[in-house]
Length: 151
Image 1 (cartoon, rainbow, N blue to C red):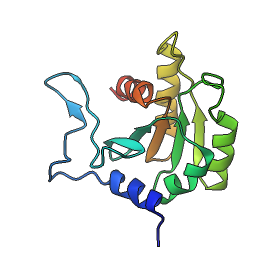
Image 2 (cartoon, helix red, strand yellow):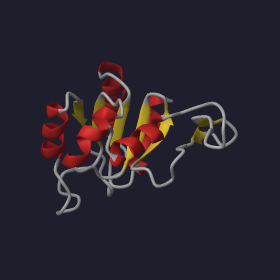
Image 3 (cartoon, one colour):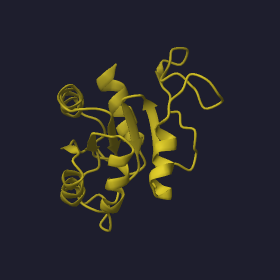
Image 4 (tube, rainbow, N blue to C red):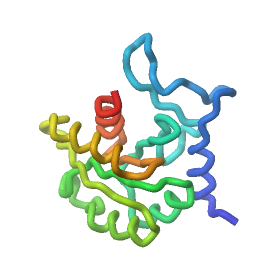
């Protein structure tokens, strides 16, 4: 039996073409990615079948992320951005123990996205197994980086 947290993750991973939760991953009318999730209280938001974003993760959440079917975790939050938050090394160790791949592509809140960030994300998406969960403080930088890299 799955824990309540794992059930929420699995419920949020479902991306169906019917029902009120469906929105296509790309909104051509507005020219940008849209995020859709059936559970607005979810810990992550599904972009498409292969990619989702989340706010800051905790190492204790990693087993549930693996149970939900993710194969890779990408960190877009620079270490030290918030002193009390877990550093990438702690997330990476928990992910490795759960059998997940990781990649560190920090996007500074002050500088914003750089061409190097986009290149690193393109390489990561090509090399690493999916589905991928990327995180930063709120998920917004991860979503924007994915939109540009996948575009």
